[in-house]
Amino acid sequence: MSTLRDLAEEHTHLRPADIDHLHRIAGDWQLLSDLSFADLLLWVPVDADGTFLCVAQVRPTTAPTAYQDDQVGRIVGGSEVAHLGVAYSQGRIWREGDPVWYGDVPARHEAIPVRLRTAEGEAGEVIAVVGRDTNLSTARTPSQLELNYLTTADDLAQMIADGTFPPPRHPGETTSAPRVGDGLVRLDAGGKVTYASPNAQSAYRRLGYASHLVGEDLAALHRRLAGDPLEGTEAANGILAALRGEGPPRREIDARGATMLTRALPLMPAGVPIGALVLVRDITEVRRRDRALITKDATIREIHHRVKNNLQTVAALLRLQARRVAMPEARVALEESVRRVASIALVHETLSMSSDEAVEFDGIVDRVSSAATEVAATEVSVGMRRRGSFGVLPAEIATSLVMVLNELLLNAVEHGFPPSDEEDEPLTAAASGMVPVAAPEVDPELRPEVVVSAHRFRKMLHVSVADNGRGLPPDFDAERASRLGLQIVRALVTGELRGTIELRAGANGGTEAVLVVPLARNAPDGRSQA
Image 1 (cartoon, rainbow, N blue to C red):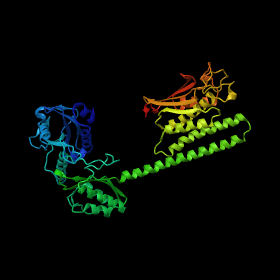
Image 2: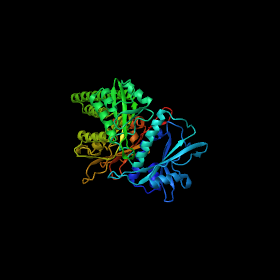
Image 3: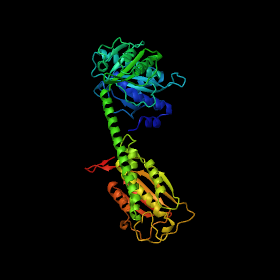
Image 4: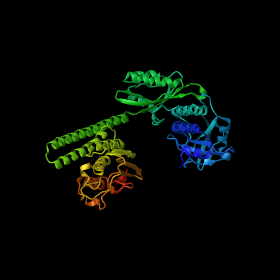
């Protein structure tokens, strides 16, 4: 199914600003649908001959739908959309006509012109039409609640025709908001409550207000109820702003251990402020769960922080031990262990600053690359460069991958560009542990460099570590290499990461290690887990 934007761009000549306004209407029109007890269909003109295309549809949660089938993408012309043509050409709400039948369902047609106000605040031209179609099969005498809903719906419909609904969305504000069924309060122009739905009354009782809301000054009531005076003032100011015709941001009120989310909407049919509509939702349980999640996240971050500290302590102890060891081989082995532990600690340090079990891996790779050039035993100044992005990786992949990259980078620097006293025994980035074999000469004009490349393709992470150093010996066999670093790399890639690794000669000389790692894990039943 194509989106609203796709349909509008393909079939109409609407401007980007017009389409953005239609998107804002579709983002807020569930409110109008529920208040109207009707389906809403957004129609845009296709041709000058009166043909219309349905680009969006919403069904009411308060009444049965008039359409069992989805209407989006349907192009209609002729007498079936004559009411849409009247609303579009005359710029007025159309409510005339007899009920129509959709199969066995009788429905009442209405058409509301959609305007986008100009930069000067004037009502612009009609750009679309909202069809409001009500299922009449369950028609009965409306209750007080339904009468208030319908009256408010008519006011909002007129505001759509005026170009003043919906109000602008505030920066950072999500689409989540109280709905009609959560609780509705209608205010007059002076801010007094003229109607409060049963659910709204119950929400205020949770805050400690047991009396009936009708006749109350809602802004003053919010000041009295809020446990925090500043919070109460902000909630009251939001209501006063809506009474002035503004669209204030959503507010929360905390009192007596309960939390209520409020949204105030101005009612300005024909540009005349007549009051405001306040939607309320009891979100006490939601906030309780949020606090529990925040506590859990803080605990997890603290655990990662302590793991990082413990790993750094282990690295420090190994470093002290290395200084006391007389055997050069043992000292080198301990120093390599220090670097491996430090690379794991780097992942936990990053996780301790994150709110989830995933890390932005590019920064870790850059730090590991920098450390490799500082600690490697080589007389040559080797440049490090990263090409592409690793993106965000889960902790279980990041921990193993950072150890693999640490080993590959160190080997690339140390054995691709060995000190001068090792020239008679060349060991390349991947050939550590092999019988020395004469390696190709390194171009003295070529700047020593190691490049780490990464890209994602079809849920696989492709990584290469390439140097322009001495290259692989002619009879190199990765499976027979005995060096511990290469054994660790193979074990982690094929075991923990469930991937593959290939060590080969670079296209322009040097050595290249190519890794392919799946980003999706398999569940015990064999299904993929993202």
